[in-house]
Image (cartoon, rainbow over all chains, first blue to last red; front, side, top):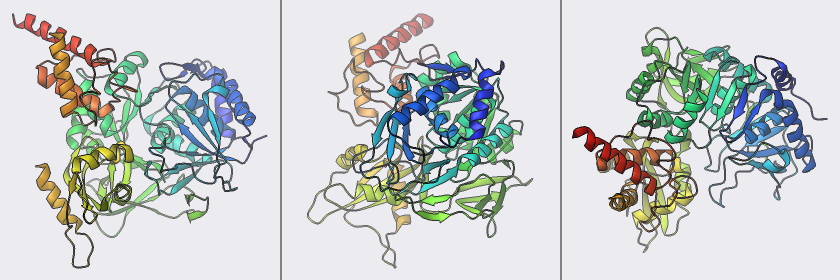
Length: 476
Length: 91
């Protein structure tokens, strides 16, 4: 038999017979299952995987929508200590999100019935499997959305549960909580900070796939959530739909990218002062957040106190790069073949790449990224990734992406400058239209310009600041 | 009236929404979400704002549902009803 993760297994058995939790539900609006049904449903799911030839010790690539069926698959893998990589849906044929060490990929779509288990999953043997695997009991996630060339972050299931327990403690999850999940459960935020904590206490969960303001309002009316995890983009979207103050929430957590003071203030008012800004990363999981009872000023401007057992420090004077010492952080990074790029030493500080400063009273505020990466729609994007992909388009010699001042609803505003190949003529509008098929929506440049030449620094490198300044002129 | 509204909405979607679709693709009956025009969450918010601005109406929470935004035809009838209600309120 597979090596069972005692924690998840024991928890689910307990909740299935406890009168306080057994009738609580997991729902995706189309399908609903109760905690009392979970142990047998997970057994069924495990059997269906075995029937497809999945062996103990295989590492699975899992593509999973926010659905009850998807949740059953993830819980089965956690319960049985199976290692799995959460992969984003493939954007185009060039990008293969399944790492080479996965012998199988398993896809669960949105809106599929949670039973029978054999028919909600599409299990595919991977032609390119390299014969390797990873140790059991790991969850793996890509660092950078679906842009390819990312590192793979390794987490131990036991540490994920520790991370989740920290969130239970911070946000007050309990059996009576009703948790709305409009963020993907295939990311660390949705899975580690909301879904798993809800499971740990046996709370009801409403999974929303690709939410929008209309869907959210509809689900909110029917499910009456007390906890929700959102992103600034979701806050912005709900501001369009909320015409009256919501009093049903005990806490709404936002994370993924910086939320503007204006939006925080407006949205916090609409949910009766229950908004919390969480700081975290794929590598460390939930790291720091204010407590639900903290003052507006603290909640709006700082990341509050670190999670239980976590330490923060700011390097080399202030503002400086934020470092994290986390008892439930990652094991390290793997490459596509399953070889270690970096193994985290126990007790070593993780460098976040974020600039931070200590505010009066000791709370820490995060000011932005320290390097050439940006955050849009909750995804960390390296500008070079966009450039590399856009340079595959015909007739383009070089692409440079610059960040403009100001922001859009997706996050930071970005513009691409494209240099044509010699003798070629480029059409900016056409390039942008092609980008819709080439790039995930969050990485799509807001503007595309054709440039015959690019400004250079004395070193011969492209002068990105000059381009940013040029971009600033075009958006005004 | 409803046909005029549908036409105006089609042009609004084609010209002002950032979704890379031509006017021909944007039909009155095409589902706005999912497999139809595939408006994502931001595009829906944009469409709500543009519609309010262009027709000088304001959606209440009762109108902000999946049925109202099933297609441009459905949206047009909501807009017409809202305008009618506002005219009555003024009169």
